[in-house]
Length: 178
Image 1 (tube, rainbow, N blue to C red):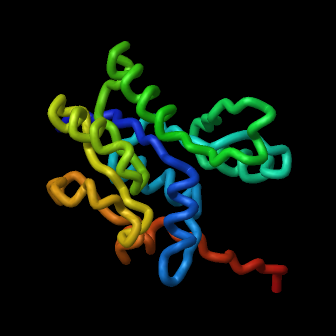
Image 2: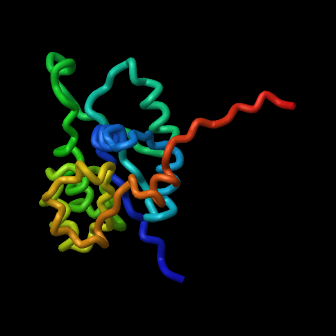
Image 3: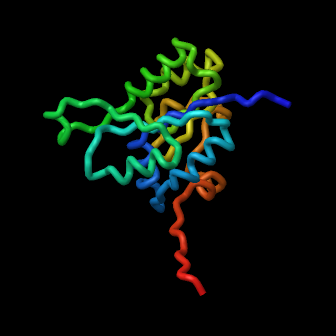
């Protein structure tokens, strides 16, 4: 019997949201189903979900992310910039991954959920170090062209029918009894 990998997932929350909402047709990820998919398909021990900044109006979203089994990480911003600044979490994700690698707190491999080309240098490094499993692009049309040289074994698209069917949010029918 083979040893379980204990991989870690790192989700660029804004990229995931914008990617699936920009798809044709737009769709939403069911966070519980997505977390289950990551665990079963990629042996995810821990999944981090990065967001731009805290806003009290989004507390229900934050609760649902955590209840689905993700560790929620927020980007720190200067209070004066909160309303005007995009929640760019790229450097936070890169720093977190590299810090875990340096401190040997990354037992398995990295699964990255984003289509942003800002991660390409880190992805190449992790592949070379044999610490990279896969990048999951939220939207085929918005995956950075920097990944064109990446071997197909290192990427997949969340919008592919097989994946989407497993993780897409579907309205649940409410039964009021007989």
